[in-house]
Amino acid sequence: MKLYLVQHGEAYAKDVHADRSLTDGGRKDIERLAAFLERAGVGVHRVMHSGKLRAAQTAEILANAVAPGLEAETSGLINPNDNPKAFDWQSESWDRDTLVVGHLPFMAKLVSHLVVGDEDRIITAYEPGSIVCLERKTDARWQIDWMVRPELLRE
Image 1 (tube, rainbow, N blue to C red):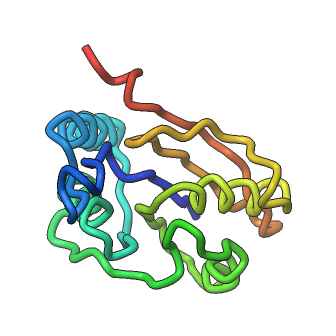
Image 2 (spheres, rainbow, N blue to C red):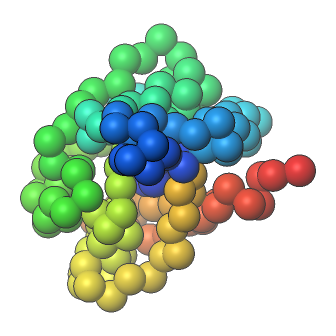
């Protein structure tokens, strides 16, 4: 099983747009990421986001590329300061490739928790619009397959 962990695209500051929607640049970064994933043949059976507008917008754009026709789910376990162990507990029953859109510090802590068993030992350099692909092996251990940050996809 693969787990695609995405930090939402760049969003407006709260004092500029109270709803913290994606900026034009953030939307373009996510559209480039969606095109990259589609070209790479990535497909998922489940898309989840935190319910915050910037994450929902990111999930919608990506879902159109990697899971056409699939409606994204909202999860109450992937907010910025949530405990990654609670999310991991739920993920053990999953058997389908899943894309999750969330926030920092949660996403970085989740990767660290799943890969090295220590959420405080940050091993990824997330920026808005980044994705990390993890794969769970038959022994139930997770490993990092790859990571892409938005500047790698800009022309």
